[in-house]
Length: 182
Ligand SMILES: Cc1cc2nc3c(=O)[nH]c(=O)nc-3n(C[C@H](O)[C@H](O)[C@H](O)COP(=O)(O)O)c2cc1C
Image (cartoon, rainbow, N blue to C red; front, side, top):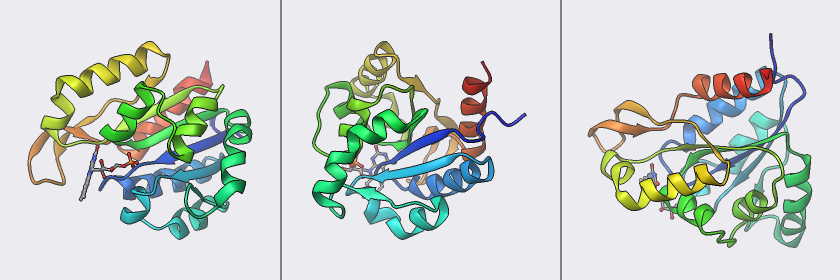
């Protein structure tokens, strides 16, 4: 059973090498007949182009710097439109801002306006992932009701190996399917 059919998903993409995996995730969401709107941070757009996401999502991509005032007004609308917001990859920077209600880009404004469940899939190097400050921010996000999609163990972009890899897109889909199944 496909529980993602016709679900409206806002996908937030942060600056990380794992941003390319968000392209695969977009493709899988579309394959599952979800509607996808992508919001990228300024940093994310240095890793992967908005054009990739607009092509894969078949929708306009929102970045805080390309869409101007129009996009800033749409954060409330997108927060209300979505059945779920998925932030993948979630950077340490954005996680810290989410934990403290910082609102200095469109992704964060949408997060703070969202009434839907918010999933976040961190991507980090292993020592960053273990850092007490990051752990504390993750706990804060959990306490606000946000849903952590756990990192995975394996080879990291730094060449090190350990925990911190963003969950594979297929696993993120499984988390969403499980959520919408209930
Ligand atoms: C090559 C490279 C890879 C990076 N990968 C990560 C990462 O996987 N996770 C992370 O938290 N930050 C990573 N960073 C740092 C973020 O890109 C940086 O903190 C940025 O400000 C995040 O902005 P954003 O949260 O607004 O997207 C990386 C930086 C570079 C240059």
